[in-house]
Image (cartoon, rainbow, N blue to C red):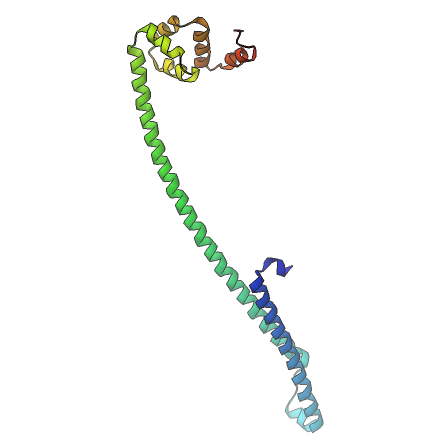
Length: 194
């Protein structure tokens, strides 16, 4: 389970550290046993002067120290990696915020230009002869034509719609009213007006 979460190099280091700790624990246990035998051979008087700590206690203590150091090292490595990732993420967030700001500035300029262009275009159609305006609006997309007609003064818009063919004027009126479903029905029925 642990090996799946660790990088291969970290995994090898951890295995090496655990191998060293295991060997050290075994050596300590062996040394403690030899010491206990030598004290026992020296007699009961020597045993009282130099008590032998339990072999298991020494090995457990050493292993706890080594394992704590290994875990601390692993945590330090993971913390370092997390800090690197955090700094990379913060840099990317900064880049994205700059890009968003740049695009918002561009979009505001574009919208200002469109508003000015639309206002000028509406003024052109408002001053145009009614028949000429109807002819030109008949040649462009319904959405654009309806947008221009909506912005024209009502008297000019009604005159232009009156000069158009009845089916085109009806579609534009429906589009302006928000019921573009008439256009969809017309297209579905093969161009016949419903």
